[in-house]
Image 1 (cartoon, rainbow, N blue to C red):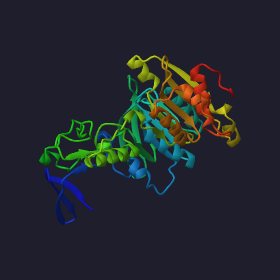
Image 2: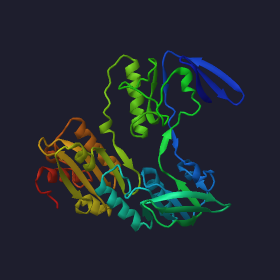
Image 3: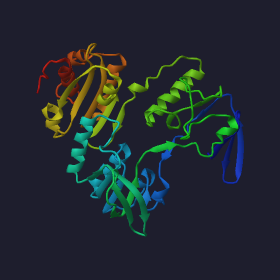
Image 4: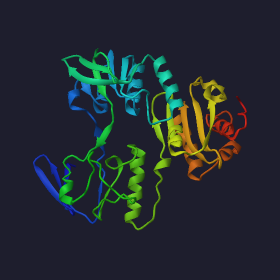
Length: 356
């Protein structure tokens, strides 16, 4: 236990209180994770102006909360506090929530969160945040120009992203290179520019996800052991743990368009699904994107109950480069949520979904 930093490329110092220990190893793996991004003008004090770290330790249910950022963490924590009775307002610079995820699913999620009572101020920029003893003032304005306004709340939760946590590692003493954002540069084997030093997880490029970091770790361990592992970042699923949940794997429509890949779309609404109707979880849809010519599934996006679990069927199919037809002809038990994937796949092939 302690704070580790490089003494040189083969030696690490571990400081704890007034003691210091040094260790050396044949290989070193940097896995120091990430920390929330908080601009200086937000006056982060960990009391009234907080991040996801402090949001998990509040001992009261706030009456009002302003959340800056409509990304995954911002939406998840907004959903939690809104369900507890907090009046939540989300301020987001982009013109839509979850700008890097599927637009259709994101729209349905926003609709669901609005019904919960969450207010959205999209296309707005936060100018400053000021804390008082028992409240906080958030000053914001339309990003394209306009009059500044203020919101007062019990807390301001800053959720605008995370940064690689490489502070104090003394990477320069080991000769390890990082980019201008502090992310460590690695090759396809997750090896840094120093032959025996690797880096994994949030400190390198790629999605900042716990399961991605775990797979990185296994990948490096197998590499060091002399094996030849494979890791496809395109097939790492992402989940938004609101309720209903939202999940995604592969490419979005925007990405397919940008890359000039011909595609076709299959959709199936949860309200037409027997299991969803029986459990009264009828919000959402399954959306499958397949190559227009080869029928290979290129992306799957889900908003609905158990989306975090459902996405794994799509991951399995896409790992073995299955087509939409492959997904459509697999026999699914009835009634289950997974039938929605079969139905969306049928729609993608040009056949009419059976239960629509």
